[in-house]
Length: 611
Image 1 (cartoon, helix red, strand yellow):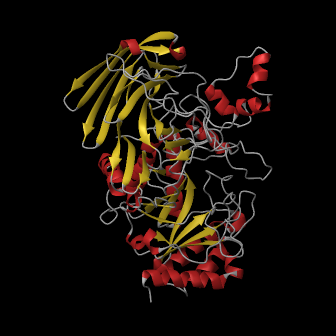
Image 2 (image 1 turned 90 degrees about the vertical axis):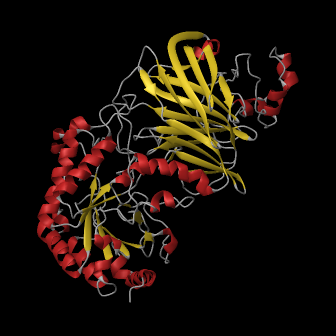
Image 3 (image 1 turned 45 degrees about the vertical axis):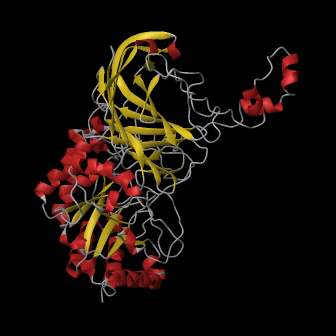
């Protein structure tokens, strides 16, 4: 984010335009005077096309400069973005290699009308803001499909291309929904969204990029006035959406990133789509119809990878074990004691049990996946599972799919799977202050399940726990944390891990912490479901229960989760969300708040119509 103590405030502190002129500095223009007064300069008006149909746009065309609200890093000059107008939109393109940014050379562009649209060709590129040229070619096909504009582009250069960007002008401002999440008002702020897991920008400027679970953004500018922008991908690839406000419209960047493990001098974009709709369904559904087909996602009602017991689930229990520091919330005997009481309140067959930090110190012990001696060891854990299953409970322990403590000697067996992002910089799971020294940690590389050594380790450890203790399911922590990288496709690795375990254990169900759209093709249930603006984007295919960090009765402890405490809600989640009611059990939940647990269970039974 930009610090607003900058040129504007510096100018405010000066004696004024006349004093600046006396010192030999030129007098301020009208736009600069407006800036001194705290009013951003108006957006640059749209330009007329050249005789060959090319609009001489730049990166500051049709946007407010400087940004009137929160903003992201950007060029400080007019980078050329020559483009074309079609279907009420103005489209431009940009290329990124691993060493620079390239635009289209306006003098080397040609536009041809074809049935239903335009074909754009550029035979030379520019860099240094248009001061230098470079060999390269870009071709774009732009078509009308009903009210939608659809386009794609291919490009080639003499060096590896990292990403291709479509720049769209004429996008209306309004309330915004990211991938089906709740609509929000960006006001005058710039917005950066990334699919999936932030698309490499999750921690850009420390967490200001937001996650897209599917690469579609819908804007509502009025009653029955919607506008969608969609990246129609057939594979999981990084896509970023960046919105820069003008007076009435956005300049939007749609960034499509090449697979990081494929270094190529050619790039072919996904199909981009944009256009108006008169309803939320009309704005969202075409995108998700494509996703459903591209990734072969089955409907919830007919999918075959859902265990029958989970279809009958009326309640989920999140039983917390050991905190990262070693503090134990519930050992195995206490977990069993809690379940024995719960079974007196609700039929155990209707209860799903997630075992969080069952393996001792949360995250620190990843990825050993052994029972913890301090919590009772193998014998007590076996008794917890066996006695619990006799009562009717169904258990799933948590496994981290992309976290490994490099202090463990075992790390050497899969160290080659440590992840680096597309640019080659190491990507670590270092965004949590586990020890509360007000500094982040540095002992856990982010692991890539697309690499054989790590995927095989996970397969063997999960298999060992299933074989030894006879579990009903397993839970993959941060499974939605796909990252573009230099080694292998973690989505494909996740699919292979789940498929291999399914083949070995056909009756053992898989769950995940967080999803992106393509994961729903082989994981039917997750921890997080937030798509309130367009609920069908998730509930058509899957179900969810509350997150590890869901506050417990009483003070709202979040157990092993780093967020500490939250506000506990004594009412279960509304039935229309289809989220399974969840109780978090920490150190004092069973001992001090059993009455609250009983009331939550009563509500869950009532909702599920259990006598």
